[in-house]
Length: 157
Image (cartoon, one colour):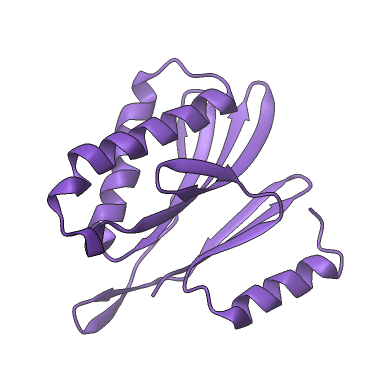
């Protein structure tokens, strides 16, 4: 099961993910984070869910559709991600059984002009700002306590 940690810091954000995926009865090495640049933005998307191919399809949809836009601000980019998630769920994910449709994403984005960044996690097709930190995927209590302890001891945010 995937574990993705995202942390807001004073100068930006940190997003990290494990590097394994379960395929049938096997675990394989898998690169889950890939930075992408389009127009005024740099972003990274990491996802967790029952179907790795479905997560890859969402990320590819973002990569395919963002370059053809004229977006320049992070609020516009946030709306873009929301609309793309909504349409993906209506058009592509709807053909799969419900148990495979469950997905959650972390998106970190930076605009180059003006320089700014934001960090979100998804809840359905909504993007919710991450103010401190978030874990998605394997959300075991031990991980939450470790991250919470790091922030409580002065990790910059």
